[in-house]
Length: 324
Image (cartoon, rainbow, N blue to C red; front, side, top):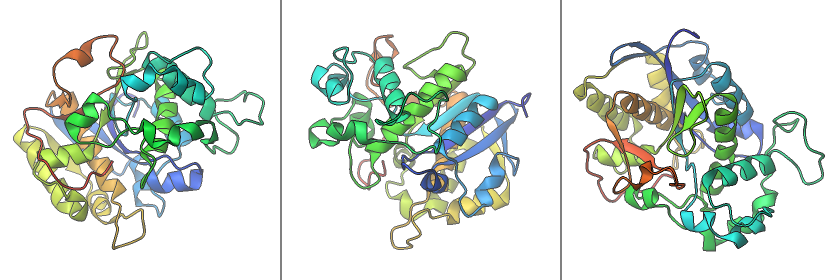
C-alpha cells in the first residue's frame, strides 16, 4: 500500500474515552487508480467499517496516518479559532498559557495538544499519549463560556457553528481534540495543515471540510434525514466533474445504515459524513474545490483562522439544520 497514493475522509468527534471514539471517529480511504479514478475497497484500512464499532481512537488514527500517509486527508472539524480569541491574552491565560496571547494558530495548536496529553496530577509523559488514551479537557473549563462562541470568517460564510460551541455534539471538544491530531500529523507525518502550517519537506495535506456545506451546495440542506440521497447526489456531482469511484457495495450499504447514536428518531450517520468528507478531499485533489471565505486573505502567511473547503463555483443553499 505504501506505493499507492491514497485519499482519506474522516468524520471526527471528541469523546474523552477511547471506547466512545471508536464509535464516533469514522474514516474511509480511497486508492488512486489513475487520473480522476478512485477505488474504495475492503482493504486493511476499510475493513473495520463493517465492525460494530467501525471507527478509530484518536491515538490509532494519528499513528495510522503517519505510518501510512495519505496524499490528502479531509477532516470534518474546525482547525482553528477566531482571530479575536487568538489575540486575547485573558483567553489564553484562562487555559494556562503564560506567554501572553497566542497571536498565531501554531502557539494555540501546540498548547492545546500539550495540555490534552498531560494530566494535572501527572509528570510529563515520555510518550506522545497518556497511557489509557483518555483526553482530559479539564484544563479548558474556562473556555466553555458562551462568551467564546464566536465564528471565524469561514464559519460565517459556510453557515457553520462557532468552533468552541459547547452544546449538542460538542464542537468544543472536536476542535480541541482535533488539534492534537493536527499537531501529530504536522510534527511526525510531514502534513501541510492547509493553510495554517507547512512543515519543511511536507508531502501530504490535511484540509478542513464540512459535509453540511457540501450538501447544501448540492441542494440538500437536510441531508441527515436522507443519507442515501445525499451520497448519490455527491457521486453524481463527481461524475459531472469527470471523477469516478469504484466503491465496494458492502461499504456503501454500511454508510447508509450506520447510525452511531443508536436512536432511529435522532440518527447520526457518521459513516455517510465520512464518505462526504472523502468525496470533498478527492474533489480537492482534482481541483474542484475552493475555500469557503470571501476574498484571498486566507492565502496570507499571517492568516490564522483556517478555511473550510467546499465545492468550486457552487452556490450555498440557505436553511437546513446545521450539523456541525
